[in-house]
View 1: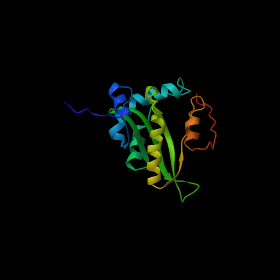
View 2 (view 1 turned 120 degrees about the vertical axis):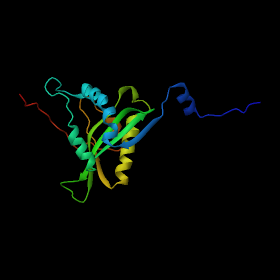
View 3 (view 1 turned 60 degrees about the vertical axis):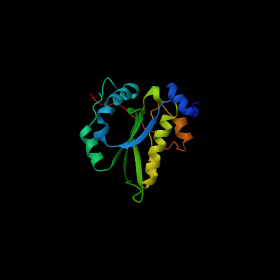
Length: 171
């Protein structure tokens, strides 16, 4: 008689394809650059307000420079190896509070079909843990007014501290 193998509910849901194994990491730009390009395009399509006037054109050379300098950090969410989310921050001494390191959000995105299962929450918590472990005092995350995730931010203990106004003045 064969022994019965017991599995957890999570293992069973993964087996059924209802839950995927999500891996959170910190990666270097040269390892993630090609994977991130289609997500950045999708992200831009969903959030950019001046698409007819300001085209997506990432400054990859500056990203590379900041990554090489250790200033920019690329946190990623991968489902079975496929990049499904990113949270990119810059870390440095505050200009106003020189005794403190601040982490400032450059960009954060999780593919819409991967937002269930608290992927965004877990990605932010992964980056937050890295920040704590590396002496960061303050983590700032910006959200878009027309696509907010304020409830998530407030639920994670973030405070609304600032409003930013924007006006297109180009030709």
